[in-house]
Structures are given as C-alpha cells and as structure tokens.
Image (cartoon, rainbow, N blue to C red; front, side, top):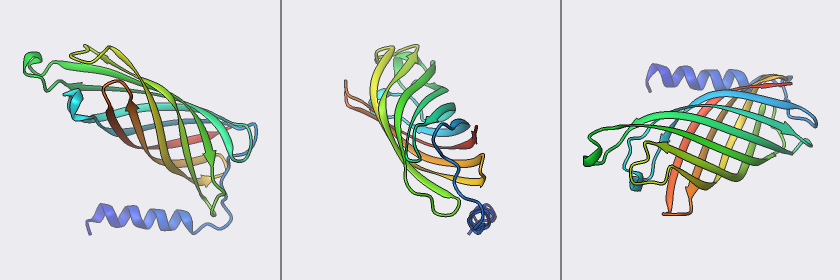
Length: 176
C-alpha cells in the first residue's frame, strides 16, 4: 500500500476508536458543510469530468429525519469538436430529505434524496438548466459532538435525455 493509504486507514481507525465520541445529529440542530468532490459526467454531456466545490446547509427535525440544501460549482472543458475545448462553467443545486441511521460510536451513516437542477454555461448541446432527481449514501465521522468529516457518493439523474452524473465528495460539517 502507498504511504497515503496507510495514513488514511490509520486516521480512520484512530477516529473510530473513541468510544466516548458519539454522533451529534439531534432535533433542532443545523449543519453547515464545506467540501470538495469529483464529478463523473454522463458521456452524453460531452464535457470533461472535474472537481466540484460545494456547500451544504441542513436542519434536523428528529434524530433521524432532516432536510438539506446543496450548492456546488465547477469549471470544465467541452469535448465537442465544434466547441474547441471551450470552458464550461456549471452549478449543481439540490434540496433533499435526509435519513440518519443509528450511530455506531462516532460514525453516523445516512441516505438522502430529492429534486435538483444542473446548470451549464455555455450550454453546448444541453439545455442551460436541467432538472434532476438526486440521491446519496454517505457517513459522518464525528471528531466532536459539533464537528464531523463527511464522505458521500451522490447520483444526479437528469430525466430528460437520461443523463446520469455521479459526484464522489467529502467535507467538514459543523453542527449548531
């Protein structure tokens, strides 16, 4: 294994060994997350895969149920010959219902789903803004009751044209 992989695995083992640190999602708590990820675009889009910076704002109604807003930004290149590597700026937006599973020590897995929109400028052959349905599976790894690392895989499915984009991401969550 590479040195970076060992460091990552050691960090996860260290973080999960704290039996006194438990997940912090609870009723009436707000969450703010900043992060980055890598977007794998559908081949039908004819644009390069790229990194995405994002922010999320959430609110927990119960220990299990909450709502969350996602806003991400990216810049990539068109792969269409007529665009000659023209730069494409984009925005991802989603509003999701979130279900937090019961925590295991400091790890709290979750799933989410909801409607969203993907915008591309210049738009090439796609519509400028397309509605989508998105879903994700992920986990928060709490290092304190108010701070967690977040790892997630999110699928953005555009119904018109059947485009399926996948975002693998991570970030840091702050709970208030």
